[in-house]
Image (cartoon, rainbow, N blue to C red; front, side, top):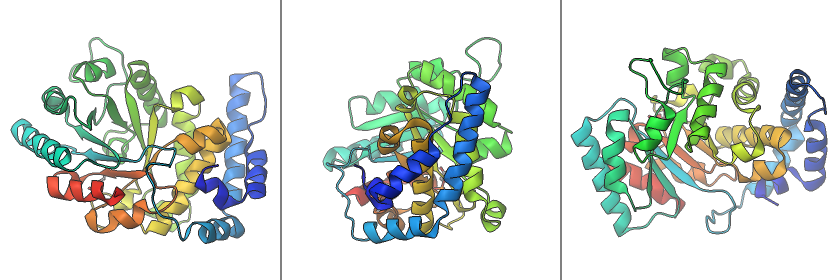
Length: 321
Ligand code: PGA
């Protein structure tokens, strides 16, 4: 059993699973409703103080062992709208040399602007570094000026795409429905999705973070199958921590990651929850990565600012050693 299951305690976990089991129903609408009910049950259970207390006491002495953990440990960079093509290539080549000299103990991905993808993918082909886009279109192909489809991303040699980033939700009005379509197209075109979720400051201050993140998961991802979920990585990024220098504490991150894993177990089953990687994002840097990654439900990071300097990004990657 994965560590988080032990953390809940076997009987507690069985109870949690029973409570979270979606209602059997024939129609899609009813099924969806069942998941919503199950989600509400997760929310209530995850708030139980004993649940949190059990987890804490069982996990406090854990050490990281990426070799034996089932889930993939991942450090992914998100360059956002930074670096011109030449600067991007220089950074990719620097990272390639650094990781060739000192192999990482986790998967490494760099997500770049569209214009960098083909050249960066070529530059790092055959290395441990994977390449991803930061977005893709919600349409398959055709007259959508300025858009880039999932198939086009894939054709550059990229294997990943970030979807649902809070900057896309906030500045470009991306809704849960639209994101669901983007995820569908990305998966259909053989991309792995790094799906971002996270609450804004007012939501956290109102104690609504679980409700918000639970809905983001349910509304965009719960219609996919457990098979499809295998190509989805989650990234919990509290919006108040992105680019602000204000990192979530490792306890805040762990609480939310455990809650997210509970939601996944409720909808997709225990195995899927054990297997899915959940990254933390938001002002992660070499100085705090080790503490964050030491938490049992934190499987790595999605890194913005600190992915723009090879030494900083490598410092975060090294937190897995
Ligand atoms: P940050 O960004 O590391 O600069 O806070 C993270 C992200 O937005 O993915």
